[in-house]
Length: 231
Image 1 (cartoon, helix red, strand yellow):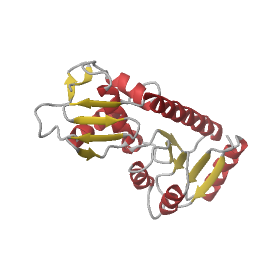
Image 2: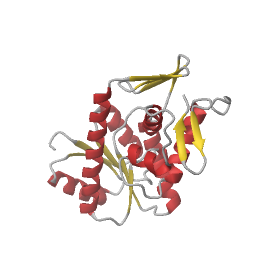
Image 3: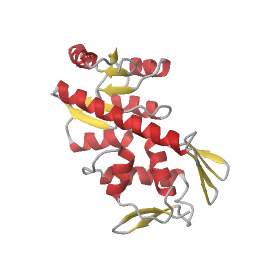
Image 4: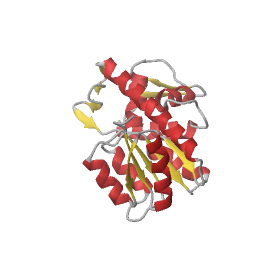
């Protein structure tokens, strides 16, 4: 794991040092940041394989850091925060985090979650690299090699999760995927109250595809069952 770099962004120095200590025991390279702007600067200046972010940081909070990161990068993000409500957890996952832990926390559990997220990211990258295909339907082109989507020649900017949902559905036209199916395929983990997360992502995806203006919807809702690709 010597070549894997983890960013730890937390304004509490003692917590950042504790996390770094445990990750370094696993032979991860750790870079620490103590505010959101510093975290962004580090991510944009060097390869980061996974980021652990506090939410309540000075200059830029963890939510804003995640939004900016997801515009360019697809590394796993784990929120580690004292904000423990279900609303906070759902918000974090919807804007792009892959996991969410609350403080106080068990450092060994955090290390286990880091290991799990990195394994999932590796499997997903291997799967995408093996596909080498382009899907086309009704003016929509999905290039899985470049992770690029165009609709009638116009590029559509999607988040990594939105792209993965669209690619999953479009790869199996007319097949109905339940919310549980989508969550397990795209998030790479067992379904656990992720229905709202999936629905929010699909709503955003539909908006970007202009489906609120188009009666011929590409993503069809099958009431009581799930979603299918209608291309």
